Length: 292
Image (cartoon, rainbow, N blue to C red; front, side):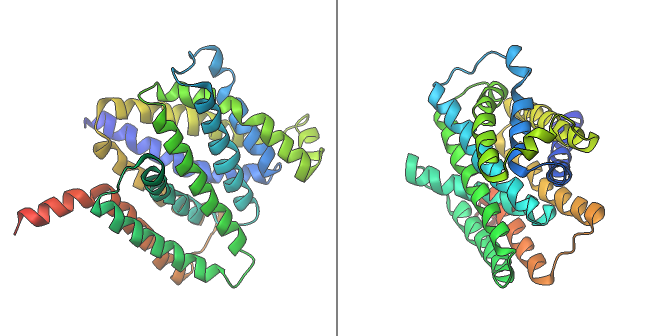
C-alpha cells in the first residue's frame, strides 16, 4: 500500500471513530430515532440524483437499508442517548464481525476458519466480561442495545453479500432511502411530535452532528474505504478498521471524560485481541506452522 493510501485508510478510521462524538452531540439535540432518520435522509439526498442505482434486487437494497438504518443505527443511537459510553460503544459494535461470520455460516453455509472461530470466542468472552460488569445496573439495557446494533449490522452485511459484486457507494446511498420513513414513524410513536417540530429551528450543534455522521462518516468514509478495497486485498485494508475503537475510546475519554472501569478495560482488551485474531490469525497460524 502506498504512503498516500495508507494515510487515506488511517483518515477513514479516524473519521469513523470521531463520528461517535458527533452521535453523542446529536442525541443531545434531538431524539435518537429522529437523528438516525436525518442521518440516512442526508446520506441519500442529494447523492441519489448523481449516483446511478446499484445493480441489485430492490428488496436486497431495501432490506439492507432497514437492517442498517432502523436496526443498527436506531439501536446504537438509543443506547448512546441512554448514557452508554461512546468509546465503549465504538468497541462493542465491532462484534458485528462475528455476527456476520455466524449468520453467513447459518444462512450461506460459509464455515469460519479456525482463526476466526478462536477470535470469536475471545471477543465474546470480552463482551461477557463487560456485560457482567453492567448486569448489576440499569446500564445493562443500553449494553444490550449496542449488542443488538452489532447483530443487525452483521445481518446487513450478509444481505449485502448476497447482492454480489456491485458499486458499494451506490448500494449505500440508495439503501439509505429505505430508512428515514420507518425511523420517522417510530419516532412519532415513541417520542411524539416534539422532535420533528423542533427541526423547524435546528441548532448548529444538530446541523454539525448530522453533517459529520451523514457526509464525513458515510459518503467520505465509505466511499474512500470502497476505493481502497477495490485496489487492495481485504486482508490489507481490514486491519485499519481496528483503529476505529481506539479513536472512539480515546475521543470519548478526552471529550466527555468517560472513564473505563478496570473490568471493562480488561473486557475491551479481550475484544480487541479477538478482532486482531480475526484479521491476522490465519497469517499467524501459517507462520507458526512454518517455523516448526
